Image (cartoon, rainbow, N blue to C red; front, side, top):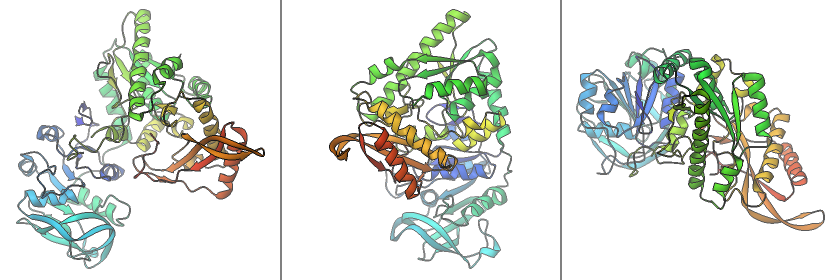
Amino acid sequence: MALSNGAATPAPASSNLVLILDYGSQYTHLITRRIRQLSVLSLCISGTSPLSAITALSPKAIILSGGPHSVHLPSSPSFPDGFLRYVQENGVHVLGICYGMQLLVQKLGGEVTEGEKQEYGKMEIEVAKESALYDADDVGGHQTVWMSHGDEAVRLPDGFEVVARSTQGALAGIEDRTRRFYGLQYHPEVTHSTKGMETLRRFLFDVCGLSADWKMQDVLEEEIRTINSMVGPNDHVICALSGGVDSTVAATLVHKAIGDRLHCVFVDNGLLRYKERERVMSTFESDLHLPVTCIDASDQFLTNLKGVKDPETKRKIIGREFIAVFDEFAQGLESKLGKRPEYLVQGTLYPDVIESCPPPGSGRSHSHTIKSHHNVGGLPKDMKLKLIEPLKLLFKDEVRKLGSILNVPELFLKRHPFPGPGLAVRVLGDVTAGNALETLRQVDEIFVQGIKDAGLYDKIWQAFAVFLPVQSVGVQGDQRTHSHVVALRAITSEDGMTADWYYFEHKFLVNVVSKICNNVRGVNRVCLDITSKPPATVEWE
């Protein structure tokens, strides 16, 4: 079992689990991904989880992540009592990264203090000797790595030796092979660490003796077994379909497990993109052959959102209204089938879980809550349906691989992500104000269609328009205007956890902006969002 947002979630079976204890680093998810890229199952839980949560998973190796804290402060987060004894008695290898290394040093009797010289960004390290983490060819050579620390280990615990130092003299790599403790002061998971993947590979396979045995086919088979163990032979299940990759793959997976006892529902909440309802329903019928019921609940959603400006409140309202629609749909099925559906399938992904959970040391419990996803943190506590979230431990690219195995059409697998709350998080402020939604739909359609026409759609992770709650002065048709401002955002990413903005050619932007201002009434200014994630999130709200 794997702990995610406080609830136990069945984990894909593997005898080679690597467990990451998260202490709040912005790169923690990258550790998880890098290990999975090496075909080893990795899961991430809070670094302050109880020992029982760790032992229940029986990890073969544990990685302590970085974090923004100082281990010499009393408020700093730590692993639970009994952790060191457990890993020693069970032969578990432990690798500390950045804060995680300092935590190991301190808890094992060494000393960590505020560093005389802080090290941030790209730095050079020198490999001092052949070791478990570095091979003989690395000795005496330099590597570029990514540092992010203000503290440093000044005295090592007994049994440790230094295997690498920064060019400024700080400890960069340490190990105690006898007790299976290892530490890196830098971040091997970041691409700026040029030999980082090689170091992780060496740790996993040469040091820990793990096998590259985690495959998507195994995930598929394990999830089908899990679904069948949860859902009784006569039970019925509702699936919330949005037309996106996640819910489509989730529905196809559950349908493979339980067949026609799955009842799919597509909800028009009044927050969809231009002609989204017609396009999605047509594709469901022609390509997926899934039984889908379309419910128009736009009035219900927009009435409850009227006047609401706070982004978190909007997400919570949308989550509540979705569940109300699903409950009503379940009641209708009960009248028809003579049995009430007990489960709701959702396409929740691992990044949704991570972003909806609070990091140790924040006064909450895990990495700071960035925003509530309507299908994670935005669900009402009194909902009647039990959740089935078969993709909850997967990243987006992994979901696409799973969908390919399930023969989900490429048309669906290549679709850009669309947020569950829909255009509510792309109209800043009150979504019902004026003609904001319709204006945004038209702008978004021109932008995305322009990307498709230019052959750029598959090169971009996500592209969309945002309606801003401001107006600007302009000149259109020789007349002064005071009209709306919109923003365009396009990003590249591997998993949605980090992202960079896409660099469009000047000619493309000129054409798109011209079409928007000439064809969408009430818009006289277009801005381009060139912010990466972090510091921004993908969506504006």
